[in-house]
Amino acid sequence: MPDIDESAAVAAFVAGDEPAAVAAGDELAAVAAATAGDESAFATLVRRHERELHVHCYRMLGSFEEAEDVVQETFLRAWDKRGTFEGGSGFRAWLYRIATNACLDALRRRSRRPVTSSSPSEVPWLQPYPDRLLNEIAPREEEPDAVAVDRETIELAFLAAVQLLPPRQRAVLILRDVLGWSAGESAEALDLTVASANSALQRARATMREQLPRRRLDWSTSEPSAEERDLLLRFIDAHERADIAASIALMREDIRVTMPPHPFLYDGIEAVSGLVANAFGPAVEGEWRLVPTSANRQPTAASYLLAPGDSCYRAFKLDVLRVEGDKVAEITTFDATLFPSFGLPATLPLS
Image (tube, rainbow, N blue to C red):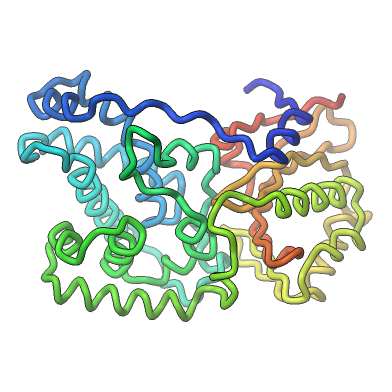
C-alpha cells in the first residue's frame, strides 16, 4: 500500500471532495445477455451492482466482512438461477431478493447471543463502512432510481439498533423504509403474506423508535458537514498533542464511548475523562499521528502509533464520531482491520 499524502487528505476532507461516478451503461442489453448465459455480461452486471448489494447486506448483518461473503454467495445463486429471471427492468430487484434471502440464511447459520440494547458494546461483529465506498452508489444521471445512502440509514446507531430485530423484521424494515419497496413487493421477496409483512414492519418500527437516540431527527442526513469536519480536525489536533483538557472540552456531558468487538462501555464525561487520561498518560509509550476520513456518513479519525524505537507510525484504530451541535456525543472505536478498505496505508513515514 503506498504512503498517504496527509496534507492532501486533510485538504480533500475539509473540502468534502467525492470521487466521480462511473457511467451505468446499457443494463437491459447486459441483462438479456447474462440471462442467456453470457458470463462476460454477467460479470459486467456484478460489477455494476456489487457495491449497493454489499451495502444492503451490511445493513442486514452489521459486518463489512461478512457482507462481502454474502454478496459473493448472492452472485453465485443469481448465476445458478439466471433462468428464473423473467426479463425486463427488474434485474436489480431480483438481485436484492436473492441477497436478502442469502442474508437470512447467513443469520440462521451463525449463532450469536441476542442483543439487548442498541449499544455497539453489545454488537461485537459491528464494523464501520468507508464513505469512499458508499459514494460509489450515489444516484447518478444514468440511474435516477438508485438509492441514496443517507446518514439516517447507515450511521452506526442505526446499524446497532437494527441488530436488535429478528431477521425477518430486519429484512422488512430495510426493504420498506430504506429501499422504498411496497408492502406487496416486500412480502413476495420474503415469501410472506402482505398482512404478515405489515405486522413485522410495525413491530420493527416500534423497536427502532425506542432504541435510536432521541435527537436523531436533528442530525444531518448527508456526508459530514463543514462544522463536523472542523470538529474532527480539532479532535485530531488534541489527540496528537496528547492534550487531555482539549480533548474533553470537545465532548458532551453525556458522551459515550464503545469499542467493538470488546464489551467496554464508557458512559458520561467522568468515565470518558478517565479513559482519555489513561490513553494520554505516562503508561502509554509512543506518539500519535491521525488522518481524517469518514465512515457511515460520520467524521472519523484514523490513528497511527509510533512506538519507541520504531521506524514508522503503524495503523492502530479508527474513531467514528457522532456529533450533536458542536460537541462529540459518541465515539465508536474499531481496530485497524479495515484500513485497506478506507484506502489507508498500514504505515506512515516519520517525516
